[in-house]
Image 1: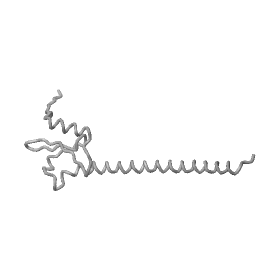
Image 2 (image 1 turned 135 degrees about the vertical axis):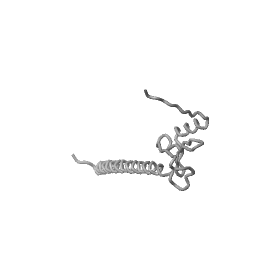
Image 3 (image 1 turned 180 degrees about the vertical axis):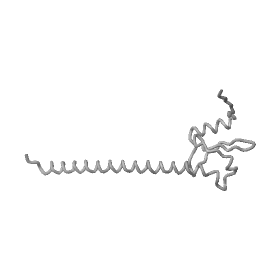
Image 4 (image 1 turned 90 degrees about the vertical axis):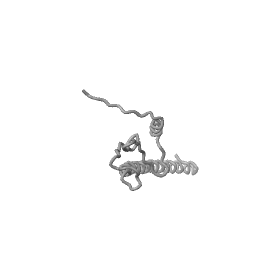
Length: 119
């Protein structure tokens, strides 16, 4: 069976398209992996940095009175006359919806202290 030149050209072009698609797909997967790794490192760096923030010279409270909790806020500062929920942010990062909800509850003075005893 003899193929015409136009049929051969179409077959070659189809093969090229398939090879290019496979190469593109591999590159897209590798790109997604790199982005995931970058975001993961950024998150780890942020969590590590948060633990040192109370010890920076610009921190306005006594670092010894800060307790790191990590989530949903970074920590709690215990002062003699008040307790402060603290969230450290860098550059243009924003509060999460949960953090905004917590801030709203504090502003509305809907914070309580409970003592629970186990017998």
